[in-house]
Image (cartoon, rainbow, N blue to C red):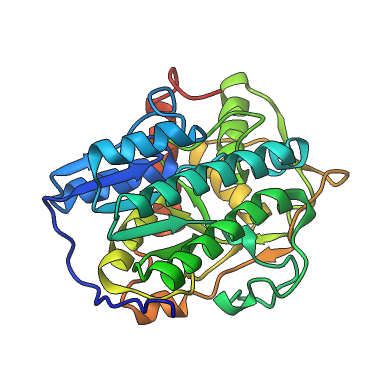
Length: 324
């Protein structure tokens, strides 16, 4: 008979070893900042150069060495529509290997509390809006990122399987579109919001009279600042336990056209925006139902205009050192 999960969420031990996989990335770096602010004394991480999470033996050795009590799995190969459409094998293979290695090593090391981070792209392309957690596996995925989505779905099921077979109180969270410091602003690998920031900022720098964006501008998207996401992660670790993944978002959405206009205003672009309708739009709308998260006691705190201003400021501050 499978062991029952016997666990009551509560305040985490600030002195325990806390491993953040992907600690230099958009989400991971925000989680490290949040944990530091909360008084955690032993936060550990390794860069991909120091530890290749696709190397199973290396991952197991690292977990045996550090003996973490808590883990957040924020490491992943990520990208926008272009990258996902062009390299589906990479997104499937790399992410599944990262997840399997980290989750298996964490189980062997006896990690007490683990949070797996997925993506809202796990849900069906035409899921009822706003998307509830129960919509998982009820329809076809968006073809432009189905390989990445399947990898993330495998991670959710892996966590659920650990709960059933080993009785460990591991959980999963599915964030909406995230943005903030340490995002990927490269032309080929970025998501829509950092791509727009870079595009409009470069247009200002070069004096370009117009900017051309992909698609029609009509799809609706929800955005959450990475600092809000990190705050939600710590909240879930201390207040939630259950097999079902938890949606994390702001609960509101805007059109791509609206977000482009806001970014243009923030960076000071006064030219004309054109839309290349021969390029794909992706999912027509993606808004998460965040009522489960709200019931646990957490709601988003940072407004989109404030978050964009912070992100553009960071982008300018880091101008010489950005990826890509």
